Image 1: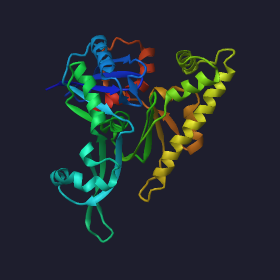
Image 2: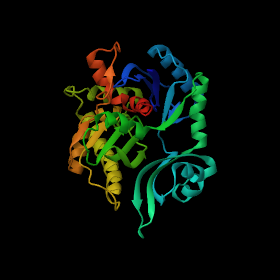
Image 3: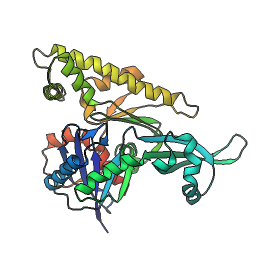
Length: 353
């Protein structure tokens, strides 16, 4: 029987939701909306002011027309989330869940009593002496950070049915099971948000490496604000004006273009460093492509610089390629512009599919 689920992405600059109907051959996107949050209400992907974020969520529900209050999957991604791939002695899944806190303490920098733990079994492997082992993706989130997020939802009278890792949501929306009709070589997804960048490397849809960086589109805004001696709001407007696809820089914007170009090189170096770290691992496969997503990905020249730095193709992500569209009431151009912002919210719901 069809059911409706809402994926909720709490970004540093805006809260976003995507409502999908599940139960048909392909999920159907029925609603999408986003509302900006007041400056300082979210900091680097964490809720700093639950009441302010809660009020933004109330406006989002009203504006987008979301009906459900409990059919919500909440995404999380910030520096208080740790993701590690580890090899453990083989055991049944229920046994691993029961013993998880004892198995993973040495792999995470968070005391287990202060963390919420989860895992994903990736492969069964053979140990150095032929023993049966398994490769597991471990996720640990600081409990106080999760409680702050839930406090914002409680203020808006919302109760999530699940909390999920945003990088895994990206994997579902940009490399969904709906599209895996043949094997896919290793590739990386790079989602650049306002102040958080998610990197996930996968092989055939299985996550092999996850890195969460505190950088994003706001780095460009801050650089423009300092370099051009203007307030952050004006700098953000300049950045957006220069990021319109296909548009030529307006006259007199040469210095702004140079500032963005210099900052893009620094952001690319950070992303390349993370991927170099992954490639240095003994079990790493060669990354053959990068899928670029997020609002920060629209900065001019960023994809080209990333491709040149790594010597591999960089392509834009298409989070709607595996879903059908209901009448969203959005013009075609507005829908195309919003797509880079939808990847997390859509992927959160696909996890329920």
